[in-house]
Structure formats: structure tokens, C-alpha cells
Length: 226
Image (cartoon, rainbow, N blue to C red):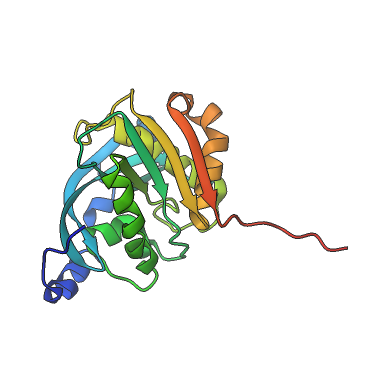
């Protein structure tokens, strides 16, 4: 991803995304009236790396999902199309932005917000570029949700699966019900990947039909002492 704007735009871009109405569902119908994965808002932004815009665009979707308490919730995901235009395959990438601050989510970093806790989401762009170059579309959910519920495994899974549903449901992404998905995550992203894979058959059988596999690294493990 080549850089396209001067660093002087950094501060202005970051401050403009601090209070972003895109993240708020403001419709008249309750969220419970919508099926999980329903797209509530859509926008197209320039993909940013540490606050600097690149020529790449990302489609961001506010969508209906489910929180850790089983309640209807709204969340954001970012979809980046591959340069090949192939809609048959995509990777749902779960960021390892482990944070207790909602402002650190990958969608905000992609839109241009720069925070210390969101640094990881910015530097993951190198790995994501390789996926794009090999022809994979990317779906990048804010796995922790809008409250940054760190390590809330089921919510991570719901957010990930409904992010895929939203990407398929949106005509703006070019993805569809025939698109095959792989799941990929490291560290905190492995929590989301693992829970999404486990929950898919029951929570999202429609998504499960198109999952071809998942890869995770830096898994959290427990050690028993005697």
C-alpha cells in the first residue's frame, strides 16, 4: 500500500474520527428488528496507515450483531477488495489489537484515527497487503465490539461471523453467498477466530457452509500446576 498524503494530515484526520457518528445506530426501529448481519450503514474511506491515507479504499459497514450477553448490538467491519476483482475468495482477518478502549479498533485505524493502543492494527497492514496481492479480499471486523469487551470469546465470535454476513449482504463489497472464507487471527485475534469457528455451525450455519478453514497463532493457554 503506497502512501498518498503528507504527514501534516495526520492530526486533522485523527481528530475528525474521534467522535464519529458512523458508529452509532440511529434508526427508528430497534436493533432486535433486524437479523444478525443486517447492514445498517455503509461508507467508503481511504485506507490509512498511522493516519496517512493510501490509494486503497475500504468499505466500512455498521451491522447488527450480538453482544456477550446475547443482546442485539451494532458493530463495524471493514472490507477491502483485492486488486484482481475476484469475488470467489476472502479472508476474515481478526486483528490482535487487544485493548480496553473502543477507539483502538481496526476500523478506526483504517479510517485514519491514530491511538497508541491502535498501533498494532496499523502495523498489521504489511501482512494484509500480501493477502490482497495474492487475490484475497479482506474482511476486518472490530472483534471486541463497540465496548471493547476484551477476551469476551462468544462476542468475538458473534462479531466475526456477523461481519462476514454483512460483507455478503452489502452490494457495495462485491462479495456474495458463493464467496469462500478463511479465518485468520493471532493472539487476541486467535480468540475471535477460534470462537467463530466453534460457533459457526449453530449460530451462523449459512456462513459455516462457506468456511474453508481457519488459522490461528499465539493462542492463550492455561498451565496447571500440581
